[in-house]
Image 1 (cartoon, rainbow, N blue to C red):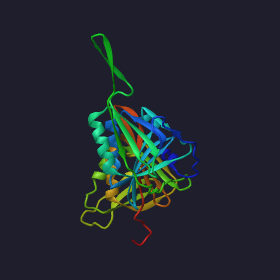
Image 2: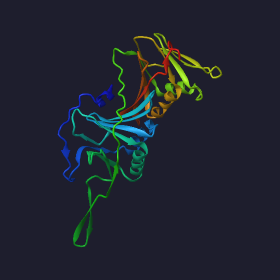
Image 3: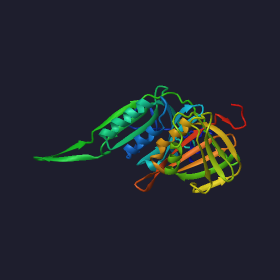
Image 4: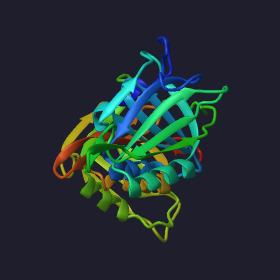
Amino acid sequence: MLSNQFSDDDEEEDPTVNDSNRIGPKVHGTITVVRVPIYLKAIKCVILSSDIEVKFSTGGMKVIAEISKYFQASVIFMTDFFETFMFFKKNHVMSYGMNLNNLVNVLSIMNESSDKIRMELFHQNDHLPLKFVFYDDEDEETEEETVGENIKYESVFTECYIRVKNSTNPINFVITEEEKCSHMVTSTMHAAFLLNEFDKDIDEIKITVDKKNTTFETVGHHQLETKIVIERGQIFTRFEFVKGTSFIYKLSNLKSVEKGMQFGDSVSMTFSSFGILKIQIMTINEDSVLPLFFEYTLLPMCSEDDDC
């Protein structure tokens, strides 16, 4: 999966690059964002907790929210999403812990007052601060002709710093080919309709996948009992089956996926033999695919065979 490039295994640092305009801190990368409203909205779709993890690598930027031990949400911005993406540490991942309110506040201010934002990643005083620079026209100068001379005006920009925390090292959930039991793809419209069939007061839902059908049914709520059986060719545009599974998940975690669905037109679900459910949403914008996607990982409350 694309998110594997953010694994912290076997890191190898390249020499860092110094910023010629600054004495002391070592700059490890610069990123320029021009799709500011989309960038802000996408991050808000995964921010469901007070703290987030931000990872940078040569493959792009990943924002992770670990809501509980059963649920992790993330958005991955690939390098093509940015106007410029320079990361000077090959085969290395830089991770920051960050307060979500600080990040959203900075991006919201930038979204109202600027067309672009540049981020700089650097070390200083044993901390890992993140520097934001917002501006309207990068490195452009305007000229105003007066009597006898031309006067040059440099672009006006604002700098803002976010103090970050030590990385919390969230688990990088990966489903290997050996562990994969089934994989299916459907439209966001069908997925949203399916989730809306279940009352918000329901706590848990059991998902059973076999060779012919995928069954969604409530657990423990006789008054709100709901059971939906979907044949493999009914709404799924792709269905791969290796082994049957039956696990119970928290419904509120599944419904949180709807926030990312507003960006995309297709949803994929992959079930592992351990009950890990990985959901990915590819994104579109005005009929074109955006170089970012959402990824949600749900761990089972228990399996059908467990005494829960």
